[in-house]
Length: 255
Image (tube, rainbow, N blue to C red; front, side, top):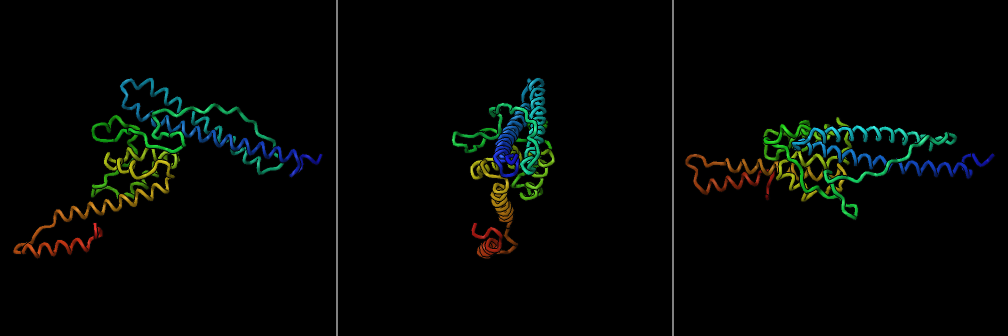
């Protein structure tokens, strides 16, 4: 009779079972999130496919099924965690876990044999020519580093975070898939060259802000210099002196 008490053999066995079940459910949720990401990227790619109708329908059905499985698995995980905290609660009914689905090439990320994430070699960039086709990307903000009327980088990233949050997409899982399509090709090249896709969103956010904030200032300063003109009756030496004084007073001193 004492075996069922807290700390007894039965209690310890039950805790081990619950812990093992928690690990399995957590891994299953991660797998389903990866599968959901793959399907989301496929849906974006299929907007450029001429024979898209049947494929789109299949992808949408697959997405609905994955979201259903995610909901069920999260419910099970919540029940297991509750049971771990309650000594006399019976183990919850558990449905068998489905096999992991291998990520497709449509994924925005690829992983090498060492588990290191790599950028996908091709992303559909949103532009004037394809904007009507990439309907799935309409709600994402755009960033152009040399656009004086556009958002600064921090405002842009805030909007990006808001859109992903609105659609229930975890930033750490999805920023590597969706952020590149918000940039023009030149900025995406910098992103791929200098920011690791293995980073979490916070670390990536810091690197991106540091780079593009400096680039924005540098661009504005360069434009000011191009527009700097001599005044009437100003000698060449006086112009050069004023020009270098303007440089020394700028935020880009030394660049």
